[in-house]
Image (cartoon, rainbow, N blue to C red):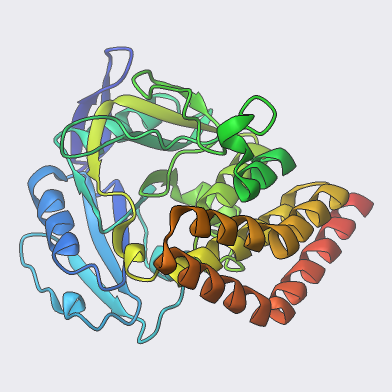
Length: 338
């Protein structure tokens, strides 16, 4: 029997979403009560369109991986170590057979209509749209400005040196803060906290690039989606709660290190070579002094300390980063030679 869930698309027409049309993937690392709240929201608002809920636990030590539920089709993969976001997502995605994959952060909570609304929107535009994101809000209901542009060298350097604050016209931030997020529209990138993608497209693109441990792997995927000729759309009419920051707030030095590392990797994968080198040089040789100077002006010893620690980790990781960069440049040269 072919079961379906009826939902209303943006143009008002009825769209049938098959039962089990989407599998939800959640990567957990010490998310604690946030993960429990996320799963509660799926049970309350997921509906029959949700097939499997797959939680990949990246070596949590807070007991959050031991959640057992009978009200949703929950599967927990205990990785035993922190695999990073993209690798953990890819591991779970290989277990999926649904038409869609939803990558959902453990610090997010679904609201009513989030699943059916986003599936209906995607199905109504199946020939063009590959990825759908929705309006993410705080507890007060205010929209978070989380949609992004594909960064260029100005975006990275502006962020590194604080120029996005004083010369935004020339150094635009990656996040589209000028967009109020109250209108449905095509966009370059929607945040990975709620990232709905067609599974066949995800598989065709090779999933998330595991060269990124965390940060920018979703932006990298959106860029490859666009290169493949499919669109990413932001849907403003349905919502989900997102805490922002999530469990990464627990490890500020590591968070800085992974962000810096991802910036360099992304630059060499997607920017012209001269621009990529400029981003790397500024990140490695100028940004540490910019950040440390800001910490001194603020009188923040804690910020000064975690900045030193983050850059120390980055410098120690340079041989591994260089290996990734060399492989990326080799692939780019091969693609250009075709």
